[in-house]
Amino acid sequence: MTLRDTLRDAPGAPVRQSRTTGTGRPDPEAAGTPRPPAPARPVRKDRTTGTARPDPAAVSQQDFRDALLDPARPVPKGLTTGTGAPAGRRYDVYRNNVAHSLREALEVGFPTVRALVGERNFTVIADAYLRAEPPSSPLMMHYGSGLPAFLEAFKPLEKLGYLPDCARLDLAMRQSYHAADAAPIDPAALSRHAPERLAALRLHLAPALRLVPSKWPTFSIRNHALDRDSPKPPARAETALILRPEFDSIPHIAPPGGAAFVAALAKGHPLGKATEAAGPTFDPGPTLALLLRHGAITGLEET
Amino acid sequence: MTDLTRLPAAPGVGYKPQHFTEIAADPGPVRWIEVHAENYMGDGGRPLAQLRALSERFPVSVHGVGLSIGGEGRLDPDHLARLAHLVDWLNPASFSEHLAWSTHDSHFLNDLLPLPYTAATLSRVCDHIDEVQARLSRRMLLENPSSYLAFAESTWSEPDFLAEIARRTGCGLLLDVNNVFVSATNLGFAPRDYIDAFPLDRVGEIHVGGHDADTDDAGAPLLIDSHGAPTADPVWSLLGHTLGRAGPRPVLVEWDTDVPDWPVLAAEARRAEAALALCEVAA
Image (cartoon, rainbow over all chains, first blue to last red; front, side, top):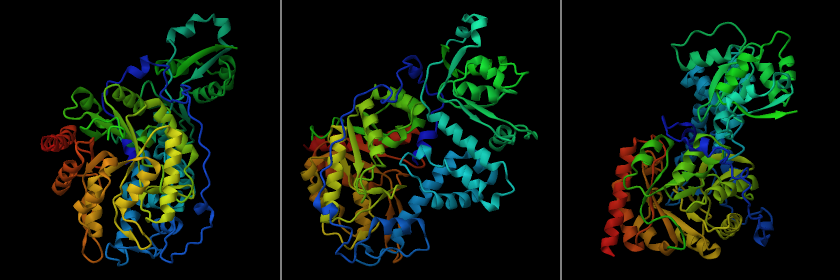
């Protein structure tokens, strides 16, 4: 539910202000808003007298939680209907809510994986994953970061070797969508630097930029999975470069050598060194143009 | 009531991103919006940009769904810090959370789970609310849950438990009348008795929303708080009863799953507006 809320776009939403109000990042921490210090918590005696409870009907949250995630466990004793009968099926409402909401979060968060394996298989995968790795934080926008590794180890999917990288691409798209805003530089700013100084220039990249390297044609597999009219994936390795001009994250295929180049820029290497990192025949022009066109360069710094 | 919330005693809706354009163009009867805190804890992008734009036009209620105030463990300090960031940035008209737990042993279960009402849980919930209110430097509202089962160990009624929490911590209450109706049906009590026992002077906000109908093992009706349907007629009637006793309050229409097109949600808000108008006439 929460993930769907977060990921669903309002098409054509005329929100342009954040760009012009621009550097006013919505992250209040980044804006340096002072926060009151956390109060010292008084230790109450009733919380420190140990876990032994006198009431035999008491249901601990450990018991409640364990049976939620394991349908084979009996419903904890001490849970009742309004008239005092054992809770029975009523407990299953919570079991269903938990599994359903987590499964739905994974469905919305991994559209490529879901399209590739189909709805029924995805449900099986999601049910196994949500029991193996329930969320570790209330931020459902981050849930599923362990799914690529889980898929790698998931025996029934052995033959779909590309699936984990497709999950990585889905995950990176989501991370990009929620990444911090940053105003891009004027594309002309780069050409204002003297050619002999360019090599020493350090480029700041947008926080929403993501690189997803793969030995599979992951970018094309995703396109074909989400849009059956798009071309069949060619037999080649593709590194996806995700850029977010404003609010919509868009994957591209990194130009030849572009992946190593962008990775070096992201590490803070200046332009000259990053170009070398991409190989002796690498021409940074097309990759730089792609970055500039999609607002992915947010600052220039002389080194 | 006025010291419990800065929301207007008027209809509000749970904000959904797909309604952004329409709500900005013509909110109809809607005078304020509510958002789930956890959806706006990313670093940037469209969600925060939309929220910023809306907050310039509407009072905003931040409604947490992940703090686990009823949890046995201590509150997650990271999550509390994220909440403090959001509240500092947005300065919302209200912050509310649930009488429920969702995290145990660092596992977040993405559901509002029930707790027994005992002396021990009372003291624990009050500690947690004290901590939240101190951290956020503001009073919060605590919402009554939907119940599907009861705890044999409970020694307090839910209205008394909530009243005592409000008395000890100074927090306000968020009265979800759909939750009251769902719990009353599921546990076999009269919903109006619950309302009449509730500390209405502590209520800073009211929720209505839709539920689904099922049955339990014995074939008895089991209502599920789905927020995926129009608010049922008996819940509107219970809202009227509540407003008649409490006077006008901010009334929120919640619709979280199978979210309808904007006109359908706006029509629900209009029903809330009519209920509020009726209670003002009666007063």
